[in-house]
Length: 269
Image (cartoon, rainbow, N blue to C red; front, side):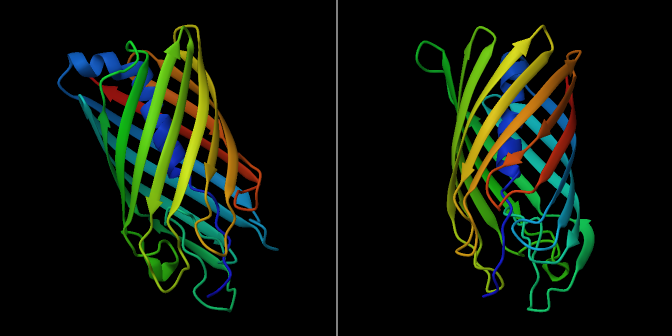
């Protein structure tokens, strides 16, 4: 088995942000309106050597549709991605595939990535309506072309619990999840746990600042566990538009040296 280095997963952290903003801005509306529709366009750029001697550049552009019909939140995400690097970097969620032989040939590929589906159930609040709990089931469909190093070609499943609590202008949240990866002879993949802790504070009527700490077990016997922090800024423009800017700072070789992301969401009604 070739030695591969694995960058940490972005998808679980993004999913937490989507649910968090949904909780803050739409939880009341979701109970009043039969259906709430949300469309999100995102962009993610990273650069780093991931512990290797050569740098890898990743560009990831997800388009998402989300339907809230309380107590359910259903979503589908279809990404476009581009990868430039030596071919020994693998995006943990299966979006980027590593080199398949020992030649270390430089990879320059772009195309459709793996499609993500998720279904979230919002439980009734507990502890005098102060704590909210969500359970999410995720599925990564192997739509990326594994022959072009854009995915593993296998189905992945994820199980995630999210907890939220708001006190005045502060929202505290945490996540506990488990990712079950499809096995393939091409990559030494392992199932793994992940967890997050975060805080978000509201400033004025429309601005939110937050910080997330994210931990995840290694995705392979050849990989490293991941420790990252993610500062973010979210701004609501009226009742329908939301814009979010974020960065990710990693503390192991599983993370890129530079990461920045931006997303815009439009909600109906």
